Image (cartoon, rainbow, N blue to C red; front, side):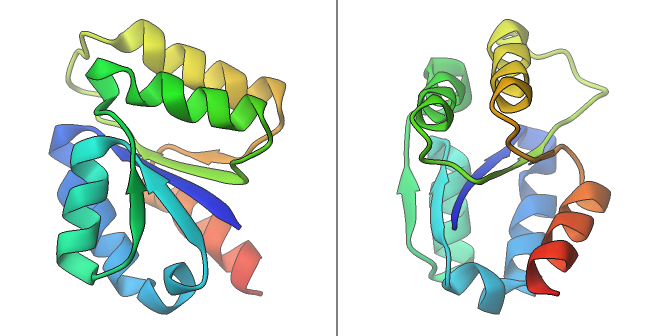
Length: 121
């Protein structure tokens, strides 16, 4: 399974801890991520993560392109709903692409837990 990992700055630690907690599951998956998130996940877990550009520099759009090409099966995008994001149009476009292509997208730890539970069970 191809899983995209994205997190806003204030949510990166939460995503990293989530991946660490479920490291055995993630070890068997193909992981890709926006730049900083991917590097931090690799540093914290040792997992191999294909790193794209950072979100504000086009990483969200790169993941969107991979979704359109059928190269992503699940998106874990831990969003910070309390902080304005300068690249909000890119974020909305990515979520729209997920909807258009029926790709599950978890925007918080609650939906991410449900997604993994469904995949593991």
